[in-house]
Image 1 (tube, helix red, strand yellow):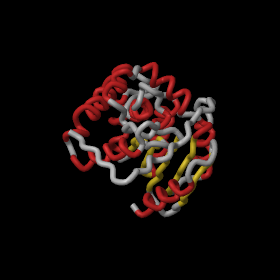
Image 2 (cartoon, rainbow, N blue to C red):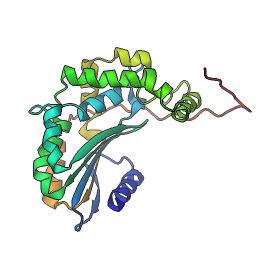
Image 3 (cartoon, rainbow, N blue to C red):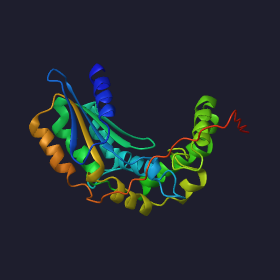
Image 4 (tube, helix red, strand yellow):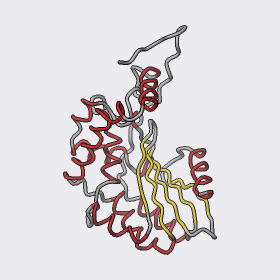
Length: 244
């Protein structure tokens, strides 16, 4: 846990640099290897009317299959490895995290590679992800936690009229409008080798790191048009917003 925390802090402080830039935290005595792929592409890159598209795309990649394996096949294969992976999307970045015991790296790596380089983008995976996302923006966020909902409302208030205003997960109507073709196009245009920062920690070899870098160079070569982050709205005196 200490290794992972130190790695995350180093990863965040480094920030986005350039394509094929690597943040390393070597731990020769560790039994785990953690890989993070951070794309300089968050919800602020969502097209107008398609708010939530970056979240959908990352979710379909991490909760879908590869060219060779279905989502259920992958879960079955990684279970004995005690391996894990997930995606997270913020306003400015999207991060994929992969963790595996060093003894299982050779078996796990083809899955990692397939997920990020050759996502299957099956209609069934897309529909499953979209249903869960729609449920979240329509119901879960409103009903599960008043505190969390108030945070989202404050974000909306502070960044009103900017590309930071909407929830990372999108809006009710915008999520409905997202199609599988939108996801494929967004992957090609924004999850590219030109806006990627690689992070790796644990007990790995230089040979593996070089292979990882070489493989990730196969990502789309598109140069994404990342919008500028907005400035937050400054209050004029005391401002109150009542939410029913």
